Image 1 (cartoon, rainbow, N blue to C red):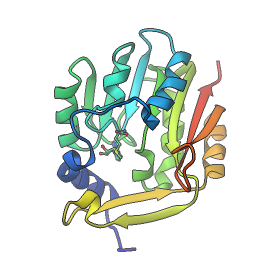
Image 2 (image 1 turned 60 degrees about the horizontal axis):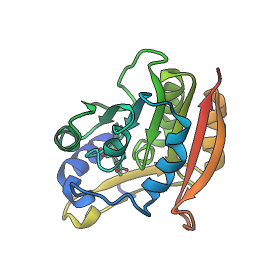
Image 3 (image 1 turned 30 degrees about the vertical axis):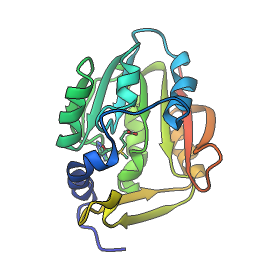
Image 4 (image 1 turned 90 degrees about the vertical axis):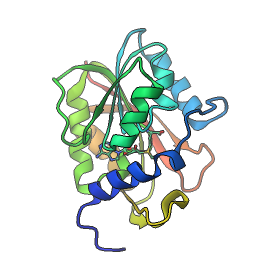
Length: 211
Ligand SMILES: C[S@@+](CC[C@H](N)C(=O)[O-])C[C@H]1O[C@@H](n2cnc3c(N)ncnc32)[C@H](O)[C@@H]1O
């Protein structure tokens, strides 16, 4: 792997340059992994719940779907992703910030989701992020996180077919994530894979903060 001095900067610039290559302005939820996992998660939440979307991208499809029933805040490192999200999902609130540094009052969300974003953080920062999420959740609040199944850290070149764009990933095995959730006081209620028959794919954990 190349020596990466600042993985965050690589990720931020990468999504600024490849935002459109990653995701268009529309997305068909029907039959998708997003549709499946949102379909399992959102029935656990009350109408009007305060939901934080970590690494929200351009807001499509997750924030756009969530905002139909919930009060949504999206956070993303990339200014281009956030500018598109503000246009595509004007009913939600978006912040351009690093999820490992942004500050929210304790207990200010009923749910947090993180689709395909935690793996862009250096591994050393991930247990602290999970603990921060637990602190932001109200008692009984829930966290849906897509995480690694197998350990891997690396950089993809010409990412999403955009010349010169590099993307950084880092993930542990799913057992390590289970341990970090337990340390943060999050009880795993459900676990699965995305894609559901995928190999290796990602693990999806749905967890609840104690009351
Ligand atoms: C693969 S995209 C997923 C976007 C969206 N969650 C989805 O599934 O459509 C990962 C997103 O996480 C964002 N991201 C990565 N590291 C981040 C960080 N430290 N803080 C906030 N956002 C971050 C990236 O800018 C990017 O928009």
